[in-house]
Length: 106
Picture 1 (cartoon, rainbow, N blue to C red):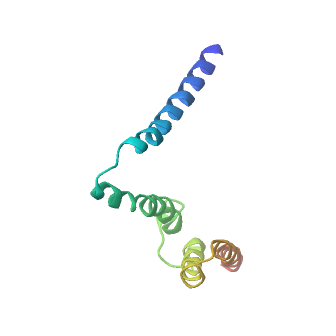
Picture 2: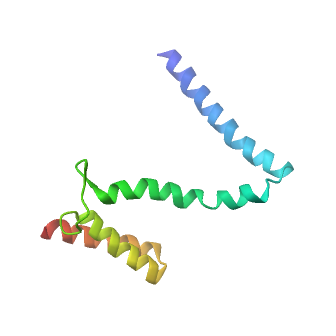
């Protein structure tokens, strides 16, 4: 039981050290412009990798019909709301309402 706490603390300290190193390194080193431009695409790529499988997959199968897949229909409506309003809170609220309605209706 004692060994697990040592492993947990070591993993936490290692994670903290790795993240701290970027803050300390960033003060003394400026990355090349190409790296700075490339890092701008990391958040959209990660969000796409997380969100798209949730939207397009239903019980392990690819489902492209918004009527057969309520998540896809709600995601499309939420994307439209986000594009038009630029409001995160409104996008989440409308998306959840549409998801519940489509799930209830179909």
